[in-house]
Image 1 (cartoon, rainbow, N blue to C red):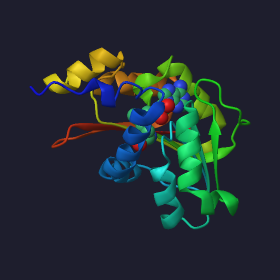
Image 2: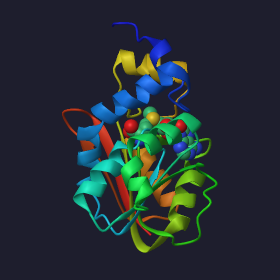
Image 3: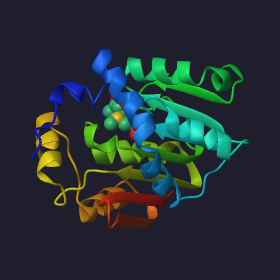
Image 4: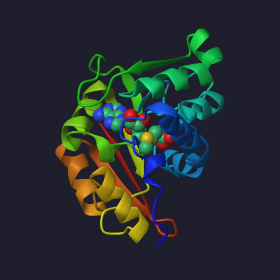
Length: 207
Ligand SMILES: C[S@@+](CC[C@H](N)C(=O)[O-])C[C@H]1O[C@@H](n2cnc3c(N)ncnc32)[C@H](O)[C@@H]1O
């Protein structure tokens, strides 16, 4: 196994500093296929929330695909919010997109504020995964969809991934555990799919 360079990912749970900036820009470039696979599992409505948005590439892509959608990104990292806002300055200025520094399990949005919510590669870092999912469900409108897409899957990681997870103290659910979390949070019509080649996990559910 090639030893992971932890200095590049040390702040993955709350990106900060030069290494954090490099990391979120890299994730903007490299998570495209994971994002696309995740979005194949849910319909996208007109009011969309990205939880743990990092540098905001997912919302940028949705802005192009869904010109009517109002897009909100939230993240606990000031650097992520600053970077996402700068990279999407045109859309932020036009009022179509906004980025707010906040996170689960305490979102500053009213009940039913969004009709779609998603989260890519973030759930591992949440302080309480069920509480986070419940909070996302709260801010979804009845019938609204949520999906989360994850590259690290409990029980299915290679040695390098396991070293990263251990070092960063990430909590990576198995497929069955993720299903249990979604159900415990109150989501209906829950599906949890495994991408067989790349071993990604995507959970989707409806309020
Ligand atoms: C690995 S990055 C993924 C960023 C982005 N979703 C992507 O795929 O490029 C994880 C992000 O989740 C954010 N995060 C961690 N805990 C969070 C929480 N409780 N609420 C919201 N965001 C959180 C981190 O600050 C970080 O930006």
